[in-house]
Length: 352
Image 1: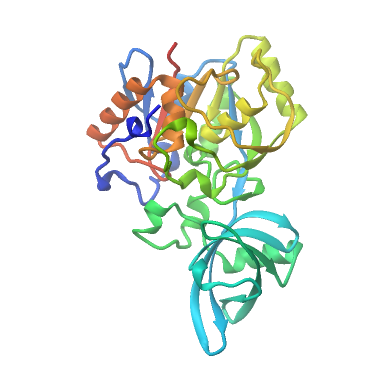
Image 2 (image 1 turned 30 degrees about the vertical axis):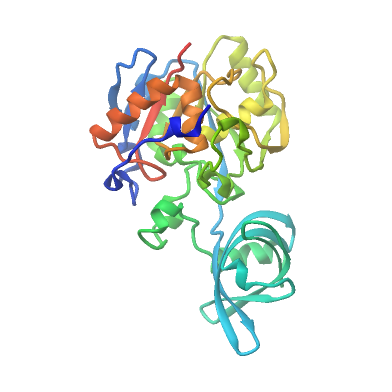
């Protein structure tokens, strides 16, 4: 399909720069195949689900992966910003460097924080600004240094309008965050509060945790003209045997699987067998879902509103139909929903 079919105009004022407080006060657009949209709130989610539904959430934890430093060469300095995105050893990270043209292999980037210093050597340079960094510390010491020196990696559409601050350290982390490794939040989970989780449990709605470490590719625009020419960046994920068993028991009993976000949906579909059951999974997935894809494992999707021409908008168009999602987004824009990572959500029931 042509990528321009997934384009739409979004007024800049619809982009949320902060989350609403409390989190579960966010608005929720219910999208059904008949295009009769319902304007609800996240607090009403338990009323919109059924006894026995299984919510599958992503328990990845976002690391403060944005580091600001300088490259020193002779008497000259150059500001360098790096976004860590994949750990390859206890002391080495792949990163995207803003100012990569100023870097040579073998040079050192110096990061400072409250008088402390963290150094990284540029071991290799790749394409499109990617570099392999070797840090002077490793393992837990490097984790602690990243926590101290780093900033939350806010999406470009927020970072272009304001700098990360202390609020983002908690705002951009979900209630389920447990396993370090993401450089972007699984944003559908940002709406959950302890009170909402308690209400869901009281209604007999189960929550299962899986892990997908979201990478920076989630923000990259689709640059090709046809969807079939696009290639996704791989992301690491895991579905444990116990989680797979709980999901399969629900599937066998005819209960619905509700993905809380596009990241658990992509991981579930990566691990799904043809009959819809889930195999335990550990490894990378580069699954790209666009219209024409046949969903095997997921029955309902809770997700935020996504960027035009993005792989995520293509995914929801595959789930509900392109015309339905175009109409839903027009409704959301007209009704002044808040868009993107810190914005509102929609609950999607698939078309035929």
